[in-house]
Length: 356
Ligand SMILES: C[S@@+](CC[C@H](N)C(=O)[O-])C[C@H]1O[C@@H](n2cnc3c(N)ncnc32)[C@H](O)[C@@H]1O
Image 1 (cartoon, rainbow, N blue to C red):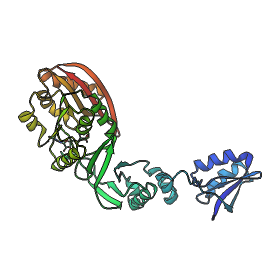
Image 2: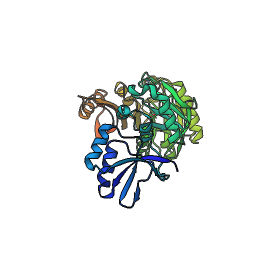
Image 3: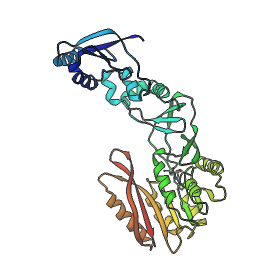
Image 4: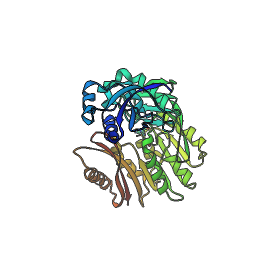
């Protein structure tokens, strides 16, 4: 083992010193601290600067920096992205290091803060190194926008491709992260809705994407029929592939086009349940959803955003008003909850409402 720079400190002051080295972010977390005679040897990632040294000396003047001790590596826990980047970036950049990113199949998608733009390729390489299952890393290059709800991406490391295969709750999806919307952060929500569907239901998924509601519904409920609409031709192509991959050809009817037009032309009054996952503008399609439901009623799963100062109650009131404008009534709110935070002060909300 090579020598490493470390702090030698009397054992009785070890705990205090270790805690300070963590606070100063100078401890080498990949190496085991060594305990020898009456001293601890704390491995460091770099030599402390004068200010840090003076803080350490405040604990005890006996503290010493030496570079002749061998340490054993901690092999069991792989280094995290944050730790690996802290080793490689200047201290003043540490607070900008991203702590998480989305993983879809073998593709990682990360938001690079503006302060780290010059280090985006390094960040990509570190992700590849610390996550062996990832083969391609993309940086977000725009917000999600447009009617297809997709964003620009820039490949920053690994294979320059956007297609992958993703598994979620026993379903397999062919995804193209650049051409059709998909979010692994909705995985629980897809599953939650699928578990609510009863035998023989007709479901209209007005904004179906590549099928993450439609497919689990059919897998969990083999007598359900799902009409899955999307306006993005790439999404519908992928949906068709996913229908075959998951062997639900007899249950899902993929439809390419505008939900308002298709639902009005082909699905009027047929649905026991309508799914509306287009949070930006689903509120403009309440008339379509009501027209698609059977005259006897059914359930709407409505997704919307609340942006401060608007609250969930404001959204609920607006939703109720629009349903009533269609001559329908809400008999029960089965569920109203926050699904996830989508931006600072912006939350995605779901309303499950029983409509008559
Ligand atoms: C937020 S994504 C949700 C996709 C899918 N339900 C999911 O959970 O991954 C919304 C989808 O609605 C589609 N879309 C937008 N406007 C539409 C419209 N007027 N008619 C049908 N689909 C539309 C977009 O192409 C996009 O795939």
